[in-house]
Length: 266
Ligand SMILES: NC(=O)c1ccc[n+]([C@@H]2O[C@H](COP(=O)([O-])OP(=O)(O)OC[C@H]3O[C@@H](n4cnc5c(N)ncnc54)[C@H](O)[C@@H]3O)[C@@H](O)[C@H]2O)c1
Image 1 (cartoon, helix red, strand yellow):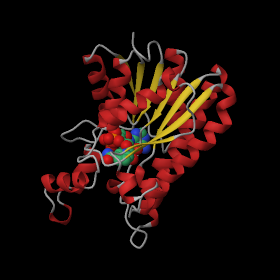
Image 2: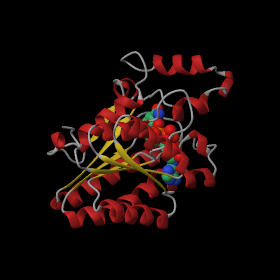
Image 3: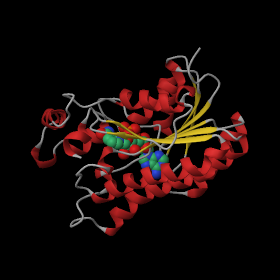
Image 4: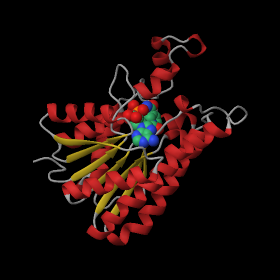
């Protein structure tokens, strides 16, 4: 028996940035599949979502890939309608999409309006609109669970303004939805990953300021009280708990998965 047996779980941002390690979204999709969920892997790049479906099915799980860009509301309506049309319901929504340095983020003195708009449109507006459309389904079911991915950057001394403000917005969004939809039996929580060894975090930093991959990893490891970065599986395990019946009385929380980093810098 898996902890998510029979559940339909939509993972948005289920592909990943190419790199040497697994990304948060893909690891979560694989773990949900391992625990018996029927995973719907959504990504703006269909081939990235299909690679995740392959990873889920290699472990005996069930998944399907759908294309969708959450900065486009019609895309969101499309993948929500297709999921309900094919699988009948949505029990779990895992909102993983997030962009940072690769989208041109920077300190407030350097950020361009275009880069700020792009990060907010992806990390916050896209999550709001995804929740809007999935909540209609969950409200009719009078049941559902949402897990949003924020970041400890929201609560730390973190330099890049668009990412920080978008991730703080995700916490506010989570709290708003949790209290508004509790009466329908819907739980909404968010995870604040810290420094993780994922391609999204490592690849854009390799070569910056002359840093090698080994130096990027060593610097990030040195900032974590537990001694090294976490992995995507740490985020996935937290997401599994929050999505599972074991977290049935938990809603509106912002759970750090950060090796204690927020206590050092926050
Ligand atoms: N890695 C870290 O150190 C760290 C730390 C804190 C928080 N996070 C958060 O974790 C999440 C991402 O983790 P990951 O490792 O899976 O990242 P990733 O970049 O490897 O994967 C994210 C996926 O989202 C997709 N995506 C991007 N924009 C999209 C859009 N508009 N519509 C649909 N899909 C889109 C990408 O194509 C990609 O496949 C983000 O929310 C990020 O902010 C990561």
